[in-house]
Image 1 (cartoon, rainbow, N blue to C red):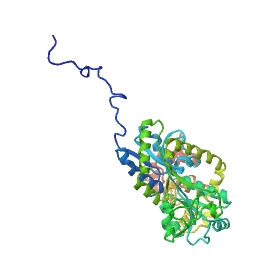
Image 2: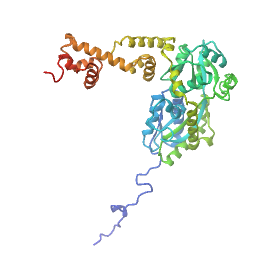
Image 3: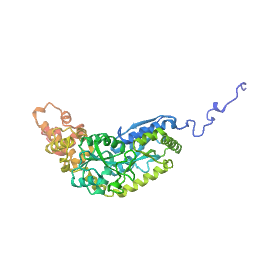
Image 4: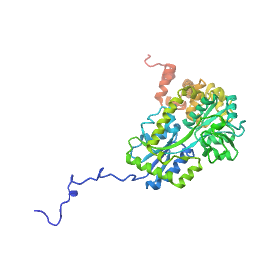
Length: 453
C-alpha cells in the first residue's frame, strides 16, 4: 500500500535524475583563477607587458590572473610548461618572437611551436634599438658599422635566442664579425653596457630609453620604418643607412592545444577589453608599445603572424649553424676581451688546460661563478678544444687512483674515495675506473684482479 502525502520524484530514484547540458559538473568559465606563464625573468620586457595585461584582464574575466615566471632555455622551459598543462583554459602564456618562433633554431624542443599551442590574442609590438656604450667612437649607425668591421673583438650582449638571432642577422647584413656574450637577464646587460664592459646590445625602448636619456649609453638607430614617438630624435635604420633592417618584438597570448573554443573566446574577449582600457593603453604607450588594431587582436591574426614568422626564419637562417658558431666568439677573441668576466674566464680556461684542481667542479658551477650560462661555458670550451666533462673526469680518476695507491688513505673505503673525488654514484665510479685502468678500484687497491688465484 502506498504511503500518502508524498509524490515520487525522479531525483530520488537512482539512475533517473536529469543531467544539465555538458554534465552535472559543468561550470561557467572561468570558475577559478587563471595562471599566466611568463617564460622570461622578472623585470624583462615580456614580464612587464604580461603583468600589465594580467591586471587588465582581471575585471573582464571576473577572476584573478596569477603571474608565474618560468625561466630558462631562452623561454623554452616556460613554453614547455604550457605544452604540458591541461587544455582547460586555466593556464596560458604570454609569448613573442623569442619564445614561440626562434628557439627552434637553437634548441631541440620536445614540442611543436606551430601545432601544440592555440593562439588567443595578438596584443602589441615595439621596435628594437641598437644601443652602444657611451665611449664607443661612433655617434651614428654608419660610423658604428665601420667601427664594428674594424674591431672584430667587439662584444655584443644578449639574452635569449631571439636576440642571439638578431645579432646573427646583423652580422649577415653588415658583413661585420663580433663576439656574442649570453646573459641571464637584460638588467645585467644594461648594467654592463652603462659601465662600458660590453660594446653594444639590441633592446626594446622600455629598457633603453632611461639610460639613453641619462647620458649613460647611446642609441644609434630604431629598427623600424617610423621613429618612436617617445624618442623622436633617434633615426630609423632607413634614415641611418641600413634600409629595411627592421626588427620588432610582438606579444601574444597562447593556450595549450585542444583548449575549448569557448575558453579561447572568453580569454580573447578579456584580452581585447584590457587592450581597450585607457590605463593599460597609457602604460603600454609609455613603454613605446603600439597596440594592434582591434580587428588584428584575434586568434586567427596571431596564427597567421606565427606561420609567417616561421616561414621567414626558415629562409633567413638557412646558414644559421655556421653563423651561430661564429657569433658565440672563439677563445682567441675572448682572450682579448676587456672586463672582469673575461679575466675570470681566461683564468678558468688556463686552470682547465693545466689540470683543474677542483675535481668536483661542473660547468654549472663555473657558469655561476662567471655569471654566464652553463651552455655558453660548454660551447666556449668546446670551441677551444677543451672538453670540460672529459677533462674533469680524467682528473677525478687520476686523483682517485693516487688515493687508492697511497697508504695514507688505507682507512678510507672505496665509496668515500669516490665521493671525495666528485663521483655521486659508486657504480659510475667503478665503470669509469675499470674503463680507464682495466681494473676495478678494489682490484687496483689489492693488486688482485678478479678471478685470479
